[in-house]
Image (cartoon, rainbow, N blue to C red; front, top):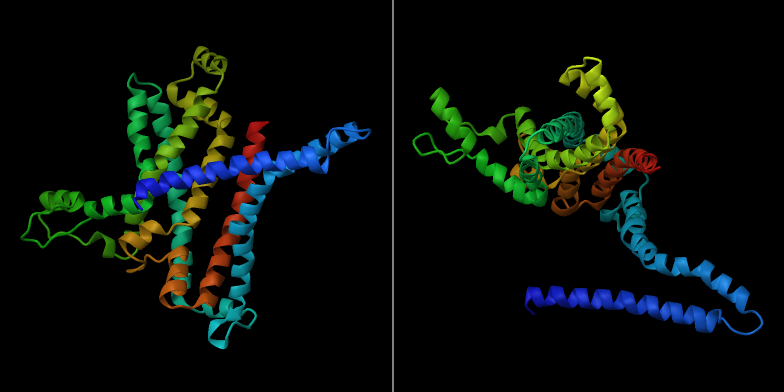
Length: 333
C-alpha cells in the first residue's frame, strides 16, 4: 500500500473509531445502563452524568497505562533479572555491574555537563532573541528564522551539523564550514572536531542549543509581552536605562516562565540520544546515558543493565518533571 494512502486510512480508521466509541458508549449509558425514563429518571441522569467524563477519559487512561505505566514496571522488573539465567531474579546485581563500568560514569558525567551548559545557553539566547526581536520592525521574520530549527528532527539537525564539522584531507577543498574558516584563517590542517576529547561534547551541545533556542524565544517572548506597560513606563520616568529595565524590571517579572523553560529543556537534555547517536555514537568520550542504554539493550543484548540504565534516566527526570508541572499550574492560576 502507498504510504500516503496508508496514512490517510490510519487517520480515517482512528478518528472513526474514536467517534464510534463515544457514540456507542453514550448510547449504552443513556439507554441501557441508566435510562432517562421511569420513576428513577432523575437519579439515573445524575448517575450517567457522573460516569460520562470517565467514558471520555478512558481511551487516554488506557493508552497511558499501556504505553507508559506498563513499560515502566516491566523495565523495573527486567532490571532485576538476568537474561542469561532465563530471566531469574538477581536483585540489584545489574545496578552493581552498571556502577562498576567506566562507560556508565562517563555517560553520567557528560549528562551532567549537558545539564549545565545546554539549558543555560538555550534559555539565555532565547531570552536575548525574544527581547531583541520585539524591538525591530522585521521581528516576526527573525523569530520565524530562529524558530525554524525546531521543525527539524534531532537526527536531521545532527546530519546538518556533521556537515558543518566535516573534515577533508589537507590537500582537498573543505566543505565543512568550520574547517573552511579555520584553515583559511590559520593555514593549519583541518581538524576532526568531533574526535577532540572533552571539547567534542560542546560541539554536540551546540546542535541542541541551536534547536532549543527557538522554543525558549517563543515562550519568553509571550511572557515579555505580558509585562504591564505601566511598570516599564514608570521605570523610564525614574531614569532607568534599557539594561536596568531589562534586568531589574522585566526579568524578575518573567522569572517563573524562565524557570519553566529552563526545566523543560533540562528534561530534553536528560533524554538526549539522537544527536549523540547520529554524530559520534558515544565514541571519543561523548557517551550519554540514553546512548549507553541503547548500546546495552540492542548491541550487547544485555536487557538487565540496559533496563537499569533506563530506570536511572527515569529517576533523574521524574523530580524535574514533577517540579515543572507544579510551576506550570502556578502560571495558569
